[in-house]
Length: 305
Image (tube, rainbow, N blue to C red; front, side):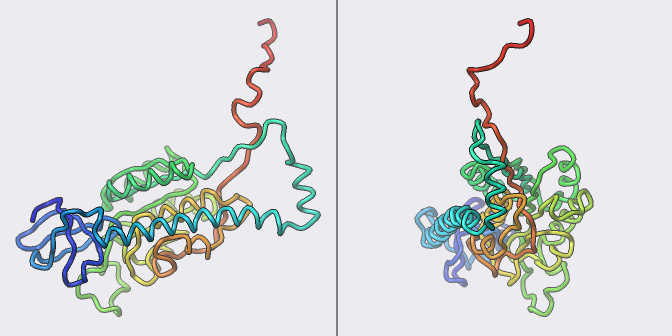
């Protein structure tokens, strides 16, 4: 058994696939492959998984991931239909007269994301999903402990609409539920809280800058109090690697005149309301016209050309 091996824990019935990050004496430091959990376990409790991609833990996580994305896409289609069906007659007519059939068609401007992640593998998965959903994203891999400094430096440069602050977290061992209030009971929640505060100091308005923060078992209440719009984990459960990304994409693709539907945003995640929660927030998507490149062949020459 060595660093980099994929393993499961016998004491937990092999429910989660981990990768060994380090071995200290007879204890392994573990990072979840699909879940944003940081844990440790004695080597005697671990079983090496030789084919991690086909393991029962990985397959179960993939099924949940695909179901979440399918549900998310269906919600987007239903939301567009709902907007058309429920506008008042006067509002709908005015909007149609204002925007109907522009000569160059429409283009979309989803909200831009700045994503800080404490895990490079998760970050690559997140980047792939942003690209798949046509959401512009600047993605940075950095350790959770330096996120407050990094976010303060990057925000004036990137000027995003949405910030994702995530990585690994977890409740420290042998902590009774009654002692989950202090941040000292968590592995990285204090760093996430400090990073949220730094972002909120830059932009206090929750609709101008949307913040999605936290990882597995993170201190949900502290993150909201620090200024996050959405955070994990209300029930101190594990969250999937893509759960913060799904919420960020929902915020990016919701029209700026409309509030993000909280129930839909949370239901679209893999772990649901036990893993993610949030407060009322407006979306960030805007429409524009004409589409870039429209009628490019009919360019009028400049005077004197």
